[in-house]
Amino acid sequence: MFERAVADEIMDANPVRRAPTPIVKRRPPVILDDKQAARLLDECRDRPRSPMLFAYAVTLLETGARSKSEALWLRWADVDLDAGWVTLRSSFRRQNKDEETRHVPMTPLLQRTLQAHANRYRECRYNGKRSPWVFHHTRRGPKAEPGDRLKSIPALAKAAERAGLPEDWVPPDLRHRRATSWIEAGQDVSLVKDAMGHADIQMTNWYTHIRREHLKPLADHGLDYEDGSAEMGTRTGT
Image 1 (cartoon, rainbow, N blue to C red):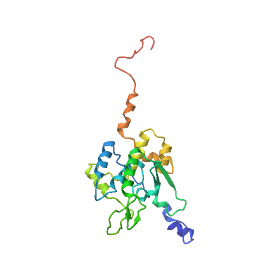
Image 2: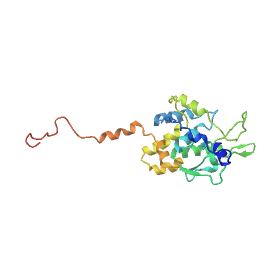
Image 3: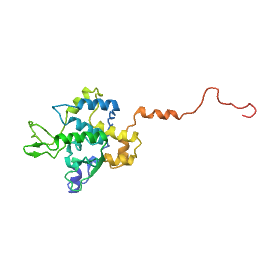
């Protein structure tokens, strides 16, 4: 607002620029291990009141998509099951004709899950029309018609409670887990950057959190020494 006022010559300078920049401590994400992730998926299966939940959870786990601004904006046209690709488009850039997109290859789990999801819902008709949205309402609600895009899936948080995940875990942490697991598997950080949709490597590095267990192999490269095994030299020579 102040910058606009300066541009319109209403003000001579932006007073906010003189204020010190606040230091904001970033919340450390909760990175699920494989057992925790499997428990979460177990709790997402076969939920009649939230039939989109399982496919949604797998999509977040396997693509690193942003939970609301990308995953819930997926259209069937963005899912290429034959070639094994998901195209992610951020809702924040949908007004831009030159919107940025990124393509993420499907893992076997994601491909099986989205194929089953498509078999069940892709051809469904609501009021005579097919929904373009991968994650959509199947029943009429207070503010939604069948086929409308889901704007949130709160059942994921309930599934996390049933799975016994840490209390401070939130769905966006799955994005951190995806980047971390790629890096731990030895994938090139530049490829991870592109798959995550980051503007630079520095952001990708912040999204990767190497878990303690993966540091254990470092202990295999220590000094091979046992008490008394080294010659201390002679008194005359040293």
